[in-house]
Length: 228
Image (tube, rainbow, N blue to C red; front, side, top):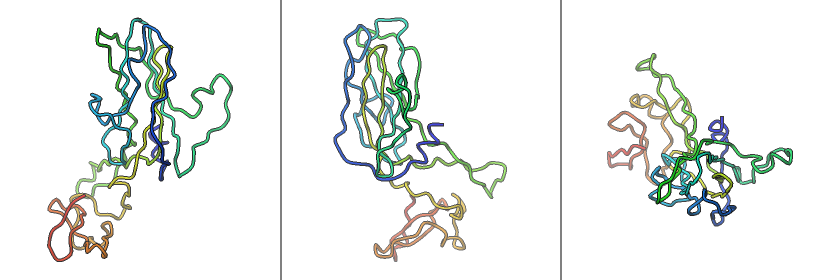
């Protein structure tokens, strides 16, 4: 359900520094360092700016765990969409901490060794859609829409400790989805070329079909065609 929600949020995000907000206390179970975001499940790269065509976004939390019953919970809170802060209805005092947040992970925290453990939780992908496949009507074409442009916050609870980290999703190359008349992959041809995404004549671009028969853009007069 969260994926459906964020898919419908769209627009430019506000600017500002992205920081992790420490809300933790000392215990035998908790954060070893501030959580961060990464395009990789391994957390090898620290990154807080992503794009609508970024394949994956992960929350990375490195922790120590000296308990058997410690729980890890991760929430996502939309901060800015449509150029405006996201607002939610008022809630009871007991629910105020996570009002407007969406729980995406709730599980027992795995034991950690001497070097600690790493929790990696994936930001929900947009829900896939299906389009009719004229070449094979019994096998529709599955598509993944672009990510929602916006500013979001991961809120992380490890046992009795809480921290958060924000990230933004900016417009990428796939931010605009063609309408239903756009030729399907493998069906681009001269007779439907005009229905491909428009070219920019000022930049000397022309519509074209790639060798894989998908819509592409080329440079006028060169015969070259570049796929998206």
